[in-house]
Length: 297
Image (spheres, rainbow, N blue to C red):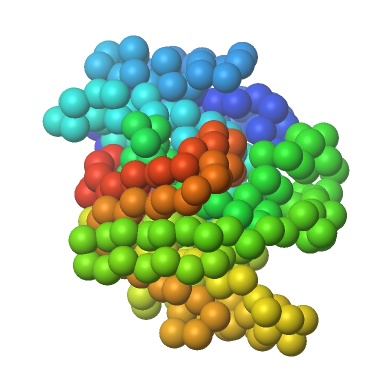
């Protein structure tokens, strides 16, 4: 790479805060590519403002943190005209990092930073949810609260297991939701316990999606809706179908589209990339094809 001006935005408290001990190495390696300006986030919205207001002065944005930090960076990017958006390198430093998994980015901070100089640009699809943005998943129903209700210190101590423990705690709260899903291709109405619209191979580090059925830059999202189990046996078989990624299961509704309208009579709480996305009776989700150039190994 030629000498560049790099903006490095990082969240010092993501994951176990391990990035703090790696900062000298990260900055040294990034300095080999050009001049680095370093901005630690201090609160909610800082990453968004940094990307939106400072991007024009740099050749590349490097961000480090968890999925929440990446979501903020993405929100900043989407406020900039597409032709003015600079390439973005992501250094995962959160607890799960589903986005990194899908792009094949190493979760080892040292390996990830070492690979930036040899990465290629990958134009990634971005989702819009009622004028908010998400990188890889918008979900409602059972367990959607797990990611944003699990305390940060609990995540730091137990890692991925923290999400599992919080999920088990919420099993008694599972409710059946009557939902209508409208796409340009199809309309589905049924009772569900969970639904997600995603652009990823992995959700929560646990639910896997067949990589042969997903393209991250094709202008389409995959939707998986889990029908309400009728009894304990049905529940267990539903879990098995999810583990085996059986998208043709009669217990699931699987859709692919660039435009979804999700409606219900009562307000549904949503999660966007692991952060609380608000409650709404109607969610309009659209795909912005190849919206951001992320660096991919």
